[in-house]
Image (cartoon, rainbow, N blue to C red; front, side, top):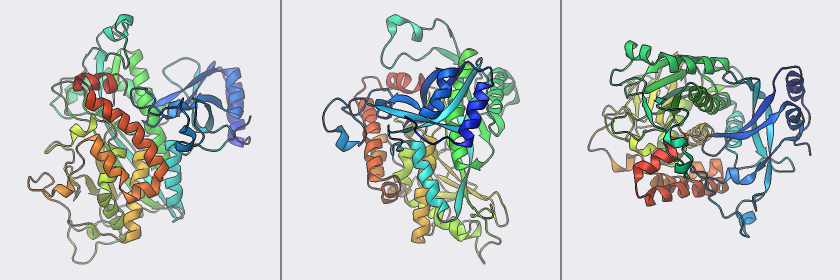
Amino acid sequence: MSTHADTPALAELRRRIKDSSLELIRFAWCDPHGMLRGKTLTRTAALQALQQGVGMVSTLMLKDTSDRTAFKVFEPGLEQTLPGFGYANNLLLRPIPERFQVLPWTEATGWVQCQPVFADGTPVPYDTRAQLQRALARLASQGQGMVCGLEIEFHIYRLRDSQHGTHLDPHQAAWPGLAPEVSLIHPGYNLLSESWYDMAEEPLRIVQHTAQALGMPLTSLEIELGPSQVEAVFDATDALTAADNMVLFRSAVQQALRRAGYHATFMCRPPFEQIMSSGWHLHQSLVHLDTGRNAFMRAASAPDSGRREASHTLSELGQGYLAGLLQHAKGMTVMCTPTANGFGRFRPNALAPQSILWGFDNRGAMLRVIGGAGDAATRIENRLGEPAANPYLYMAAQIHAGLSGVSQGLRAPLATESPYAADGDPKLRIPTNLRDALQALSVDTAMTHGFGEDFIRYYTAIKMAEQQRFENAEDAVEFQRREYFSRI
């Protein structure tokens, strides 16, 4: 059964594949946790699947981070909880022809991103990419679009035995499996060290070549403070492209590095004593769709305003958006930091936020406002996220929170000058664990309205399964080694 009408883009992709020397095509889809899954088809089968879609078991949308199904799919009643789901039935992956790539690290293999639909072609409402598309449509209805720049910290390690490591020993297989044994690519604690960069150049070259071969706007690769920690920075694009790139970047560099004997992890806090947490800093601004002009930029600062006032830097729209991000920070935290591991990052004086505050060019604040009057690069940097976040949910949460502030005419308080003050208001504290963050999500009006109550219930059930296993784990560190370090 055809999932959608033939389009010029789809016809062009079929022609391109038919005329190529490609042997295999991977049909990939982003799961709720931001990780790619999919099926690999031969070229002949792929040409047919471009029109008909690829069958996918529906339980893939119902799994927690350990790959355990969080819903009772073989008992009556699931159809009432999750319409369209039941008894591990099939969904279809619908290809997005504009998201086709030839993979640079493997031979004769193409890749196309997909989105899940029901058998009748109806989009699955729990698909996270569809959630961002709906949020962007909400923006577009007001004449605005979203532009995002990615600043991603992560860790690269050298595998001690990439062929026969203990994590590949069949006698030690488990669910989840053992984490690989690794060594450092640089010793750390020498920020932006040119010597450490030279030491780590081989894996960083793989990251560079992989990202650029996939058409991503990579601008820099940097040595971060922690041992084996690095950072990749990308130029700004429209939000959907940025989110798509984030999903592919994580998967691509992990695969390319693995073939060369390295292990890349986007886990926030790897399971070693001496580490530095990794963050994902999301730079964002809105643009007017008719002109492309930055909607956060103002022509001149408000009269008699100082830099601690949002009106000094941001337009009326930007001020409301900033205030909305602050008001709904607790509710959106789990969309930005979705793993039990990631909450260990929120500690004082660690270049990570601890409280719900904003500052002008202040890297200790949760929201860092950058730019000024007449500066077309004026933007808000959200420092709340971890690199394991699902980018579609992370970005959609910004839109829903920001627009709530705009619609209510909210205004932000003065910018902080002491983001780690010991006497800070407890009401401004970021949630300190996944359970509290899920509770904050469930009562946040902007999040429940924006994502929909059904999606919030669905997502909470999946993440709560992860949190409950974390709380019940006999060894919390070993849990995180297997759950996150070996897989994310």
